[in-house]
Image (cartoon, rainbow, N blue to C red):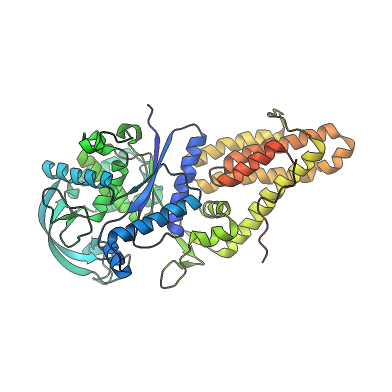
Length: 493
Ligand SMILES: [Zn+2]
């Protein structure tokens, strides 16, 4: 069996409900998975939820339920949202599942035996929200977490350490030898600098946190939630079976069919975990490293950072219920280059909806099909005219594929909309509705060019707007034999 294209989202931490940030990463992963499938590759798309740690315990306590009940409920909400957003993931892993926990425990023991994990004592400034110690040099005003701007607490405990310091040079060498690993490039620079600045060993167990995976050899220690979480990428892929653990005899996946992952999509706030700790753990295990870790930016809303206290957190359903799933998926990846930071504003959403979707694409399709109904008759299965439009479409296809491979989703969409613009211009110039009176043969040719170029465009937009693409495909095949509703009815007001 050939190796599948293995693509992942981060597993989302269940201390709060899903918002636009989660949706963004998951839709990006879905776009890439659909694109690869359309190109004939076998794909495995993993997402899931990160369910251990003090913050989950706290959230559950506040809600008056057990952590298990809490995570069951929120994990179910995430699953339902992915279904609503037309996400075609192949697997959904929860870190409270036995298939994951067992592998985490085993890996801990393997690294303990190898000496990559050792017992010690740790004291430091701990941020409860990060569930991490914050390095002295990173504290704001000498006491606050730089991410949460909240006061850290000095904490001392017996703990097991992962020997991260031993991997500093190996990581630096790896980044140099694999320039595509840290993506996008401008974010990779920070990581290289961070590693070159020196790595400290990482505390990977807690005695204070009950809601975690206990270690097998010293069960009063539970495994640090980040160490636990990162392992999902291999536990889901069948690493337990690869290790020969008897619980995995009948596991449906073979590790070597999936690993190494082709790309981990993540948000920039968790880049270090994925680009420093995760590869070091894999090196310690002697497992190959993923080919790419890609960190995208953050969304602000109407120019402001999203936060509970401001009350501006965007629930994707508020948008999709009103304007449709595909318009939402389109906007997120057309508006902002993938990798950069973006701003979600309802006015720019409406502007793009009306201009790009209702006018440029929607009107083009209905104009073309209406004229074809009068002048073409049955639409043939193939058309091989050497028209300029079709030549442009073939050139666009090359550029489109390059952009998709580079994860430049906005540029890929630009290719589609440049073609759409060309087609609208072509209609305005050739005026098929007038030409039909004097030259029906040429009119038919023009309309067929348009229809077959639209079919190309349809392939371009399909990973981004799957339901729209299916509907377009249906109409383009059938011609205007019925009265169609507009693909994207204009938003008024
Ligand atoms: Zn923090």
